[in-house]
Amino acid sequence: MSPEQPRRTSGAGSVGPVEVGRLTGAFDLLTVGQLDVIAQARRRCERLVARVRTDEQVERLEGLAPVMPLDERISLVAALKDVDDVDVVGPAEAAAGLGPKQAYLFTAEAPGATAEVLRPRSDAPALPAVAEVIVRTEASDPGVRVGYVPGGWDMFHIGHLRIIERARSLCDRLVVGVVTDEALVRAKGRPPMVTLAERAAVVDAISLVDDVVVDTSSNKLLAWEKVGFDVLFKGDDWRGTAKGDRLEAEMAQVGVELRYFPYTPHTSSTALRSVLAAR
Image (cartoon, rainbow, N blue to C red; front, side):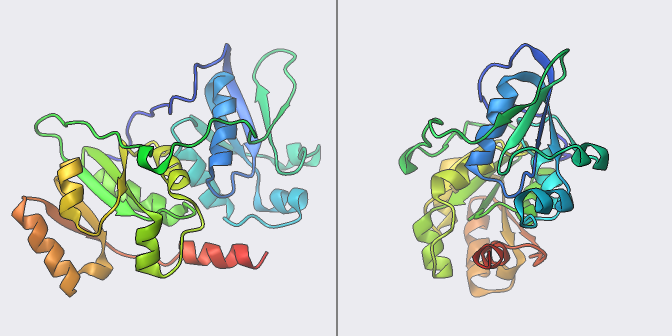
């Protein structure tokens, strides 16, 4: 059960006549605006290569260093369903000019093609209402091991991606639960920076994610009734606690395995919140 799964497109629209297109940009933080630009590019080509600017190039163009370092930005954009390959903008190309600020450059691999500036569209399709946020679970075939990993996924970062990668390696089909704004306020004492609909859209864009549901309750038996998962993934800060013991007992009643993942403080939404607040 390797995390390397066939890439799915996100239904952004039919591909265009150009075989290969290259989209150049910072790809700093995964937002619905960035996903919209990638969707625009993907409609123009059959195969999309994301070309990521280095930290120095981003700072030179935008006047600010990227929030995320180059290696993390590469990993995140490479994980998207609509991106087929990733490379880095070289120094020679950067010396010739980086293009306009806060924009992406799309170039088709075709004779006479010129760079096209792409930005998030003001008339992009509206995100679904909370009640309609991506709830797409389907009955699994017998023998398919379904995993469920709930989380806030606020300001999606490399730590979030590593959790999804590890969870996907331990199941055949991965369903991700996106916790509501209200539940995050109860748990953390403050609202998320990104809305529920946007957080769900970003998670759904990750190629290793098979389905996304809205997680409305701390009672995971309710999630189990909706999803029908075989294994539940939680952070190891629950291990050995009263709430963890209760959860283990509840999951055992329905034959669900509980797997703990270690918390890695390298990147967190709290840290990103601090970085953005300082700008």
